[in-house]
Length: 509
Image (cartoon, rainbow, N blue to C red; front, top):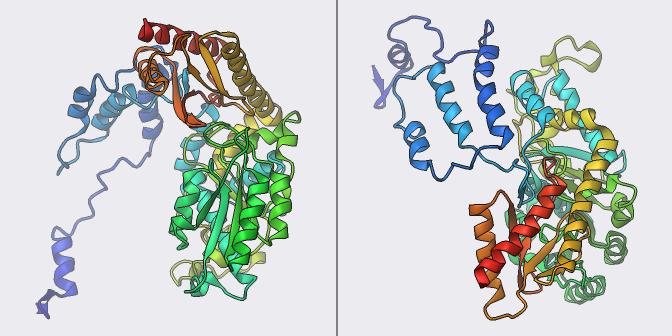
């Protein structure tokens, strides 16, 4: 029977289950040892891949692996055995950001503890909510990470998918707090229709800050870039002048962003000086430490990050220097409650309404949410990212993190020394952390150096195992290795310098 042209409930049910049977699900449910058998099938492929001893064939074999993997949507599934066979092809042609010579974007393939924690969390901690061990690891890892980076124990933190989301969350808190000081709850009522708002940061600030301004309704143009000094750090006097000028014009300063390690050159802004200026102008201070803040764990580098504990918000990406595996960022806010007021989702009958037990009568892991994560950011469902951070820190400890940071910063300084000593290499920025920006410069300059170095970079990727990225420093194209890869050796550092000289010489012969 049709009601208003639609099938009624009974007819829909009959069409959905016309056989009236309870067929088992088509997917293998990882029961009776099948999960371990399937993993064992993939282990040899993963082992070969992570040895990084074979040539990179991802592009050369593209037609081959696409022919295997890119098929029409299947009607009847091929089964788990076929999936394993085809996954092996994908692994063979996978992403090689873990190879020792990869020193490009600040990305990292996970070390073994991160791989295992990811597998464990995916299987046994499929959701960060509810009262189970992986939910507990979320809390523990947030506490450990804050302590590692020198943040106060009272800071409220939340894991998210990376620096992009973490910056969005932190600046959302800044927007909320700024307007609360003016009697406006923007989380509830939205931005006022009149008036101009600004977010301040150096010209080197990461572009995710501009995007956060857009997503938060302030607009990309609300970001006011501030000039940098000779060390690529924010010019504090220029910041003060910009805030003073805008304040006289009635502009509302939402946040000042200080970089704890810029992506371009690794420069660390003078956070304490930024704090002093921002406080005078009653502006929120946000520290983007996605890349560099982990270096604050090393006593020899801690002074670079003076003032970070007093910042209003801080972000850090464990998936960078800690090598947890991509997809793990964290945002911390000094003012408890601001995140909740900015991002509160509101209760739902199907979710919060399901929990009726009081704190002293909990009997099942399903009796409580286990944390207000949904109200502290932009995600409801999310994996247990804390398990990955916990695993890495439990494996290597603070001492292991310090040694890794020291080794990588030493690599950048060593490369800078090689560059300074070579007649055909030019250092473009003195390393502060683990980034070294340089270029090839022949004795007789007869062509565009930017184009020449761009060709050298392209040949590095195609012909050698060395994969730096590039940037622009003071208007000059730079070859830019960033050392955060735990697999990179001192020999790789020397070999990169040698390769740049060799390719440069060939290009200018």
